[in-house]
Image (cartoon, rainbow over all chains, first blue to last red):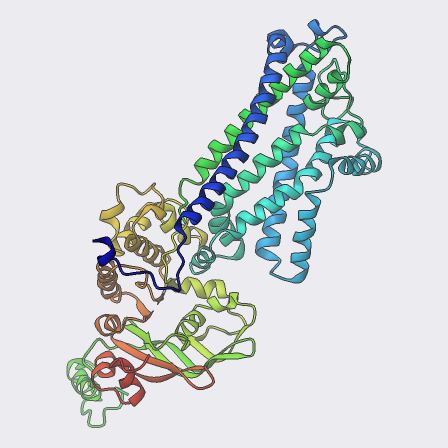
Length: 298
Length: 292
């Protein structure tokens, strides 16, 4: 029956269905392996950190100050230092980064110079963070005379994450359909009213994504701060504009380089605190992002 | 013209206004052939040519658009209909290489005059686009946006309701004004775009194939809406759909492009005349479907 009703394939086609399906299955397997490798590495890392760190984690650890004796050490100065850095980075890098992105994407026009600028900013995102440390040391600590303060560190980290903020914002702005801009212009909007009313609401979720990534990076950086004079042992609450300070990753660095096993334990506990902080930060950003994209469907 | 009444016998008695009006009306009615609402022209294009860089997209167009009527622009793809339409509200100013020769007058004012701000032109000449493009905001915000940016001083809630009612959308959305404008159906989105356009009270509404992305039912709703809106607004619509031009418009302008690919106007006339008794062979070929 089948032979008589189904016409023979014309000779030009060689369906080789079995081989095509096999290729698909192999590719699926490769992708699955990739995600499995990633997950296994992550789980092992988390397990190691939790196993070492959890026994040390208690209220006294969170509210205490560092000590030469691990069982009495705490990380409050580092938590406060990290929060101060995060706030200053947020109020400097985000407005400047978003404004620069708006300029490049909406005002500058599509010239060769604009494209050159964008390419260079992308490259800046790949420059090792220690280089930004050298820049921060020369510019903020010495030339501007801020000294080895939280402010100098935060401004250095702002420079470090600006390229990430700018590039992500440009991508988000460019993803807003041209029809949105025309719709605003057709109602008699000036360029700024068009940007404010049509482009930014559409680009906001994408910009938020860039900000999440950038903030996580700023909070996790240790190398440039080490270079511009942050300490690894601070027993007082840092003043943002004067005196020494430390941050969570530097605290980890300081403890982990000691030979005693107990210091390894409190370093792991500090890592847990950092992870929780970044987790909450990202959760907050995701909620904001969801609210911003409530009205968008394109 | 009505002032010229040669046999007026009553110049000595100004109190007798009634009989003086008599001959004036008689002359006026005798003079006009079309009995429809008397209407002046609101837009006049004088010898208009449009260029994108070196390329001339539209050449030497002379035409008039009359007040409170629907004027349809028809013609094959690429004949410059949209270019012409987007020149009227200076939307093409956004294209860096664009320029024009000739003049476009809106109520006797040269829209490309030196002291004319394109932002102000676009408030006076509204535009509805091919694909509905509501903003990623609530329905209320979509309608109020144009009024806000133009410094509207009245009650925004009233304006939003009035505009949505005029766009025949109020009953569909009155309970969900806070919802996203983008969550509406295609036809509703297009009516929302019409509502936000009439919220800024333009003198003219340009529509660039407003139904090409809509199903037949929504298309019909938009056409009914246009017929309603022409009581207050002058409407110019670009359409690829000849039935739509025939159904919905009062005046039709047929454009085509020459060997140099520059669009130009072949014929302008009453829609009935264009579709039943065109003067030009090219028009007849197009409206009868033999070409284009």
